[in-house]
Length: 135
Image (cartoon, rainbow, N blue to C red; front, top):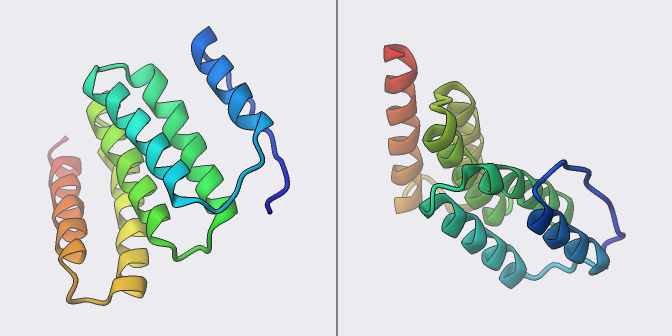
């Protein structure tokens, strides 16, 4: 079991309600919870509601980092999601590039160099590097 911790964000009412219900729960190492929260972030992103998606994505990353080991694949997924949000909402390629680099390191350690996920991470990193140089 993981001890309870609190995050403080200034958010719209319905997100504050969402976070307080999360805080009332005891976090457990359940990938389903992480996946469902990532799906919620993706739905906000698809709707263009980046003001909701960004803080939620940061919260999910912080929570996942506290729950799982530093080299867990779920952390790499959260990093990729947050990097994607930085690009789509703010055109912040520099921050996205740092997150993609970190996700690539995790994937290399856990999956090995031959994994197709390594290719995806390298593609993400190359695209952000290109855009960061152009901007």
